[in-house]
Length: 297
Image (cartoon, rainbow, N blue to C red; front, side, top):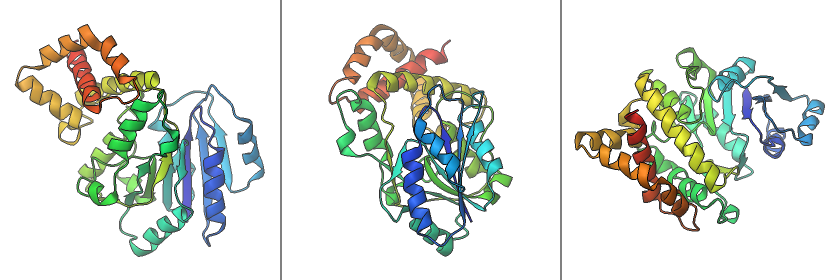
């Protein structure tokens, strides 16, 4: 009935699998857990335990295929009609996490895509990860009632239940190779296919909180990927706030000023973003100014 699929890259996914497995074993449901490691450069000895669990399949790829294509590969390995996507660096917040999804399947079988939500454990906050934590806690940790007001722009595949029939209309885009916005493209494709997205309060903790310097670098990569996706026609500015603001600034002819600001001050801005209490407004301005810069190249 239920396939749990987990893309893995340089993350120990055993704590997640152990937590989910414990909940599944207490439910009267047929299930499988499939983990595919996308050519990680790190290995974890705990992953060897999967060989002794007949309901868990662990596959290691010799070559990295990217964040979208690995999800398509995970789909091809599933045997059940309902598929729960979980990121390897997550953990269920409550011990009725699986039961809540099973209740949703029973009561709302025609609601084919359901995002359970993401949250952050305050004890994980440090000075070194202050930017990623603050961004996630402010922008990603949102109650279902609010997410349901803009369902397509609030979807993350880190904790999402999808009926297999959805993928006869929509697949994850194989054109996305770099980090960033693959969820937004998938959501945009769902919108075009007229497949509704619903939101639940059934969150997981995001445990993989990067240090500030790593998050800043990944954010720049995500901005570059966003611009490439827009140029390929894979994403609409109407469902992406960064693109929407970029075109407003371009219309007002302020994009050149922001491009200059990035070129001149990006190092000092990055330093301020690495402090104990970084400003998300400055972070937005930083990403926006970088988008203005690369759009001119």
